[in-house]
Length: 363
Length: 167
Image (tube, rainbow over all chains, first blue to last red; front, side):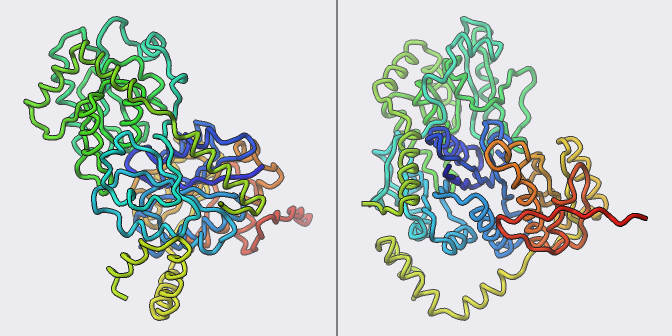
């Protein structure tokens, strides 16, 4: 039995850890995945059946102290579990992690490096590519409009399709999902999930709830609460909430979603053909969410609400509450559908495991 | 070498070439290396390390609150170590999770678990330079062996404890 360790950074939501779990699920049975996470999602990882290690993000320590401890811990876990391959999913590789890699060149180090970086951003991140033996790039639906630096550094990179936790066949049917969420059949079901990194979560979510409530009983609203304890937010009274993982399992219950535009949520909604009004976060350090959602609107698979204005909100919701328009969006999304890149990424990692075990090198 | 030129150059090199350049730059900056080594030697210090073993979430949070009260409400002085994954939020005390026995035994040799935990506890105590250590809950003594100052190698198991002499 070989081991592969996934190191996930501590993003605002569940993106990094979800991609690693998505890949882990598709590794061959003779490879044991170990998730080494800096994320509060540790309990979620364990509940999904993965073996997990945890290392808290820096809080009161200095950067040198924290990186020193990280290096020590990684060194100990490498010795303990002897992973053939170590995969890092994040944009900025930690100094302590790089030092641990340097001290142990016997393993294969892989960077799972998502694209769609904001134009000009991430220059220093790319200088650390030399610490990795391979790079895997999870695909983007909006790859045609990707203007980030990663597009100029793709030599030798393994490109895969967008990575999703669930395959289509794992989603519950509409009837099953409605039953699980205790929704009345026959209504228009709306899922609100403005995004955990969005500082405007509560006021934005509240605006949508108030607007949709004016449609009367025909519209049933469900608000997604983050399964991360620290991210739960207060909401208007009397709302149905859902806090399950993976949330995508119940997506077929919904006619439309009002959603943040992080990598995972975006690709799940487009990939599973749920018409969406995306609210891109223009303030992320590196993720070009605006380009992502604008592209989706141009392709007719979703709407993008960027200006925060009441007029445009009304315009978008008018369209999305029209069943004919939603049907058109679903058809467009089906025509532009993509596969699940998690299997491709798992295959590449399995190949690297074999190389390390046999001493072979990449051609 | 100005940082701007260094970054522009390294982004154009192959992985092997970039790694070589990084090594050369580090070798040419001994003062930076010495400083980095001195700073890296600094480890955080906690006044109280509490190992809370085999407890549930509610009990772990109660233990944390008691430790904070003892530590004068200074979360940076307290470290809680547990096989329970009830994480504390930012601004709370330091927290270290050690994988629980049940999960270990599903995947790895059950006989190795005690040694693994003993080594991990020893590493944590060393990393945090804990002044005092308290163990609460159902923790077997061999798991604490590393705290006695004995260094255990990667595959080394703590020795069986001898029975205390008869009174």
